[in-house]
Image (cartoon, rainbow, N blue to C red; front, side):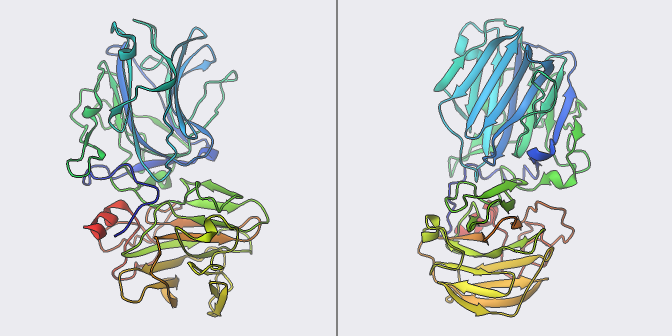
Length: 459
């Protein structure tokens, strides 16, 4: 069988959701629109799917007045969600769930349904995560009955960044992925308007939202148009202005087909910075560091590509068992019996032993890695410019294998492509199931590391 480590939280939904948008906070990329006259300012529902990256605090959605006295926002603060609304310099609603959301391999569904006309205070602002109502809060300040609101009013609303500060400038950008962003004006909807529990797995998955009643200010962003990621598909033409997002910000990593990324929770990477949705990594200290994928596999045939962009000390590319000693012992990839790596000088390592392949690479060269865990003889193969350069036998994993990179000094970087590349990729090669966009042809029988392919391997 194949396993996902940590567990994936969203799967299924067929091909209903094909795209997401990847926010890279350092670029201050976001979407913005000033809403108009609401159908009913006292009732609204917001819904979207997100996959975080563990990078600081980020604002997913904000109603911005440009000063500290009036505004509303939804933050993802590392592992926590914060919902706040301030009117006249007073907090009119504040919700911080007790639960933490720190699985950066997983997609979560967020839904906040508001009706401030209701008599029961807790029912005026219902929060749901993955289809289940949140009832335990660190902080719970419910909206007052018929209280003034900031969301769904005729002010600027932003997705992916915050302008709510004393200077009115950009702040706290979001790092991560969003898909299926829906805003309903005039109705307090249940989460069943946006998703359902899969009858086989009981996992919460998206449903078709195109037939919903959106109201005057309502919108539906599915991010399917790479040339206009702010295009509204609700029928209202409430398009959002795109700021610093490009066609490369569109991703096929979605709540219905979750692609692997690199995992910031891994204990072996004390000096690594992550960007581009955890698909670009950079060492920040002159120390040994390893970085691993968010998905580990124990069977199947899998392929990915890696490339270095800067410097002369290039990373090593390979695999590591999920139970490896390298989880807790800082040493290079290939130094243990359960890890395998080839470095840019062409030296292949496992269990501390070396094998000089004579193959080297430099900046900008796309290297491919393919692992075969199905055949009687398990193998790792390394490719340069689409041509196989080295093949070696690997052990049957004691647990499961991560794809991994190894960095031994400051300013070593790598971009990793599991099928949804963090860079502009014109190669256009997909696997046999039609998933992924790779620079070179995917070796026959090998697949991109994503949940749809994992489902096939496990079936």
